[in-house]
Length: 228
Ligand SMILES: N[C@@H](CCC(=O)N[C@@H](CS)C(=O)NCC(=O)O)C(=O)O
Image (cartoon, rainbow, N blue to C red):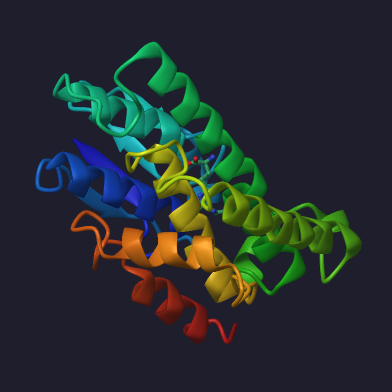
């Protein structure tokens, strides 16, 4: 199996956490994609994922799977013990609901903010982004506001439960954790008085499947090189 990604980027980080949590981290070969040179917008990569984003999982039979939730589902079910996406119908429904909220309110929104309200990944990517979103404009800023509202929402949720979907760490926590990682480097910090969210984050960052797995330093290096 191969995973096309770039170490340190938020959605790739989601899958690296999943692989560690499931004990599959040595079962895949990572193929780096040069996002800064816009390799993911060229025909060879678009043939693997027409959305032009990483990560992409390629199975040994050639099946291509993109979307971090789909890749997570695949690995979580591979050993018949879906600890991250729910075992019962109710667990599955709650995990998916909270995962989608984490994605919509924070992880996708910060991606849009990063690409359209900050210098993002630099010049080579510019040609592939919507021109009307360019610069520090209202649409990009609106996504930033969505992220701030998302942080407020999750801080409230976490006042009454240890993890987003209840008592257990799940795919929903992984999605939010990666989104907050991206928010850090994009300049939107979790407010210091969001105690529940900060406590959750500190606990999650110490889990063996998360600690030192996200490669966040690589993202910081990329952004520093770009003069972000
Ligand atoms: N919905 C996708 C989002 C993937 C995504 O946005 N990946 C980012 C890296 S974290 C990317 O490839 N960005 C490049 C771009 O937008 O040009 C998923 O869940 O995997």
